[in-house]
Length: 83
Image 1 (cartoon, rainbow, N blue to C red):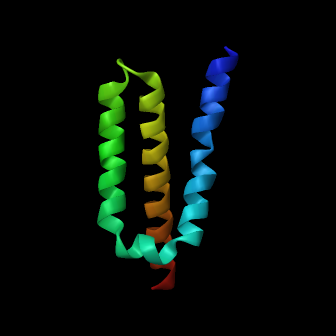
Image 2: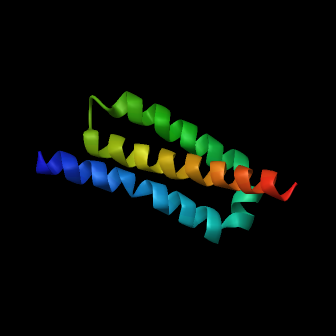
């Protein structure tokens, strides 16, 4: 049970990391939006495929997908506010 709680906490740390990346790397994310989107989609699909084989790799890919999607969401949200 303690391990599951640790895993949930570790995956939830991807949310602040996504917000931090959207703040720090704004210019690079705007230039390479399609790569961040493709990275997020690939990570999400690969994590679903690998879930039954290796849970550690699957959780890492879920972490990457969450960071990618939150970063893109934050950038798009800020762009709409500027318009």
